[in-house]
Image (cartoon, rainbow, N blue to C red; front, side, top):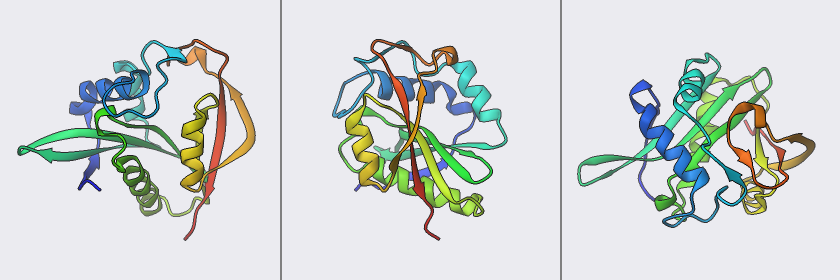
Length: 178
């Protein structure tokens, strides 16, 4: 397992985060084991969308960095949206060159613990995963998440890429263990 340093993303991170998110979601390079490259075209996020997210009071975006040659490398990010009884996990990605090293699991565990510290009143985590990404759904199931009966249409209106196949969003949840 890599030793990671976590911190809250800030406005100085925007350009690097846009590159990280678009690279991780929409390319299949490095050690990547999953990608949206063949099912969604276009960018996952742009400057305006990320800035708007970072300005939301109920949203926190965390970055994971590792030191290499006394230089800090941004390797992952994960977002938490705090709702009344749930924390939604999203904007979760690991740079494809850093995948297959256990970093995703470390980052997810960090985010779940951080959510409990920041907002102990909620009772479950939730996320939405593209239904065609069966390998990713299976990964989250191994991490304790379960599919629900809730399936939503792909949000073409949100400017997060155009589906190349018929896509739906699979809702997944995990109960909080306190």
